[in-house]
Each structure stands twice: as structure tokens, then as C-alpha cells.
Length: 328
Image (cartoon, rainbow, N blue to C red; front, top):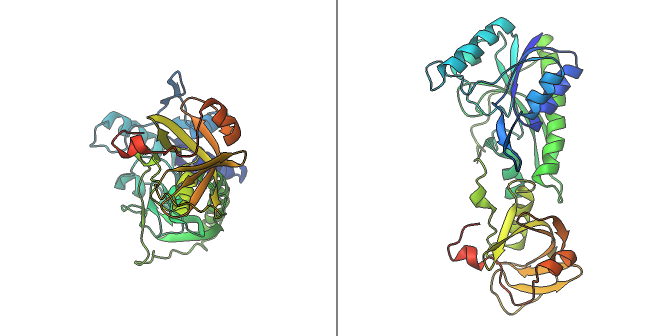
């Protein structure tokens, strides 16, 4: 079975590696163009491209696949490469480009997508972040037959995965990536044996995981401690949850729910105590103990070390500059 692969980030690289290790032929890989990254903003290849080149695979990096779009030359080159690859199926994982109908129709078995949620919940770009942020007890991976809609195609395989209380988007991502690689290998094996069944997605329970915007980083201390905690975990490692003090940015890395603090002053963001255990902050409901923090451009530090270089004290109020109009 010839498998063309389309993907870009680490989540996709894990799936591509699983396909290779399972013995599938991958004559062509599509991935996003190299992007500036790091402090020097040097062009950097995607994790998928790096792995594909290590394996000696052909790689195409079109800016668009629309033959009548803004980059028709890119699309034409990709079209020629796809025709030459004679793919039985295309596997897509976090590719980042919309597939036009000609791509969906080209492989004899169509295009399969590895989606990191239990569809139809959390269709869209950021299913891992949104599942943690919403407080979901579980998520999972769905292998889907792609159609022209946004994650609306028939489901081929689906498997649940619990979201642990300490999970961040980073830790959950890694487990889902492994699960996705295993399930796509299983799906293709079943496809070869003509035992893969298509099930339409339910019409109820549809939610959309909109792309994470950096503006969402700011913590709203008027929310409950539980909600703020989920927000911190959902935005770890990127783009990171943050607050401000006197206009200076503070990233919030780790926390504990403080169920013991009692306070008369109800100001949200008020620092209640600072000690070796952490920095306890009043929330709209309950309190949060910040245990690992980071200044802009600095290192992640335990709270006791952080306050040596950034003095925080009871009575200070976090987030005031942001709430009065400054952006973080």
C-alpha cells in the first residue's frame, strides 16, 4: 500500500514514524514551508520534514494546494508529485493546509485524518487545549475519512484516553500522538483487509476547538481557581498563561489549588501569602497557589527562588495593569 503523508508538527512526525516502522511505503511527504524560529529567527524545517529527509523520502512544501489560488505554481508542483506517487491513500495529521477536492479525490482510498479528539467533540485546530480548558474527563483520537467539511467526515476508528488531573497540553499531546500513530497503523491494516467500517458522526455533541490566540494567555483572576488552573495547564507549554504586576509579565507554569485559605478581602488577583510552598492568590472563587513562575526572557523558577529576584508580597494585586487595558 502506497501512503502519501501530509503533516507538519511533532504530533504528525510521531504518526509518520509509526507508519514507517510498520513497513508502509511512503513515497511522498507534504509539509508546511520552513518557518523562522528561535531567537535568531532562522528558517527551520518542520519535525515532519526533518524526519522524512532522514528517511530519504521525497518532500514537497507547497504554500497552497489550490490550483486556482494565490500560489498556483506551488499547487501544480504538488499535483505532479502526488500523481507520480500513485498513492492508495493519503494520511493527514495536523498539516495546516486545507485540502481541495482534487486532493481528496486523488488517492484510490481517499484521505484519512488523525484527529486528537473524540469527534464530533472538538472539531477544529486546538482540540487538546480546549479539552483541558473545558475540564473534560477524557479525550482521544479519531481516525476519520476526510471530506470537504471541517472535521466532519465519517469515523473509521476511535479510542478514548483519560485526561489526568496534572495533564498539560504538552503531556497530553505526547500520549495522543503515540495513540494516533498506533491507530493509523491499525486503520490501514484493516483497510487492506477490507474490514474498516465507516460510521457517520453524530449530529449532537458538536463543539469547535478554535485556534489558540496569544491574547488568551492573560489570566482572568475573577474566574474560579479551578478554571484558572485548567487555563494554565491548557496553555502549557505554548503560548503559556500569564499575568502582570506593574506592567511586567509573569508566566505561570505550575500551581496547586488552595482549599484552606480564608480571606476577607475579595479582590481578585490579591496575593494572600508568600512562603516556601508558593504564592497564594485570591480568585473569583477559591485561591490558587503558584509554585513555578517565569519572568519574560527568564528561567522557570520555583516560587521561593522567583521571589528573590522579583519581590512579591501579600497585599499586591496581580493582573491590574492587564485589566486596566494593557496587553500581555
